[in-house]
Image: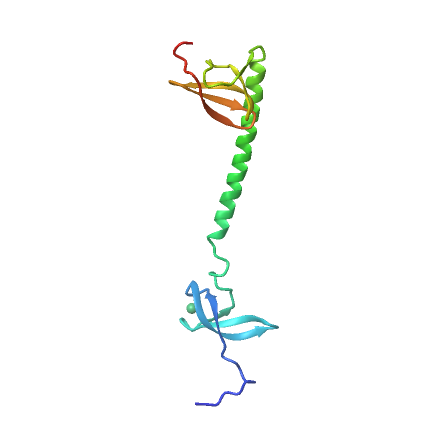
Length: 152
Ligand SMILES: [Zn+2]
C-alpha cells in the first residue's frame, strides 16, 4: 500500500527474452544502462538475467527465407549460365547445319538450328513425340510445337 514516488526504483515491465524459460516473457526492469534496459527479472521464474530483446521482434523465420531465396537466385543464375554454355557448345557442334525459320508447319530433327522471331537462334535438343521440340536458345530452354516428326 505504499505510495510509490516516481524517483524510487520504478518497477517497469517489459517484454524480454528469458534465458531460463527460453521464451518471451513479461519481466521487471531491474537495471538500466543509459536509455537501454540492462537487466530484467523474469516474472515467471523470478530469475534476474541480462536483458535480451524478445525473439518475436526479429522473427527468426525471416532469415532462412532470405538465405533460401538468395540460394535460389544463385542457382537460377548458374542455370542461366549453363544454358548459355550448352547453347554455345551445340551451336558450335552444328556449325554446318542450316538455320531454319521456325514455323508450326516446319519439320525439325535433332540438331536443327532454328531462327525464332522472339527467342533468336536456337538448336533442337530433343524431340517430344508427337509434335513438340525442345529448343535450346541462348538464354532459355523452350518447348515449341511443330508439324511433327512422323513424315520426316
Ligand atoms: Zn523466466
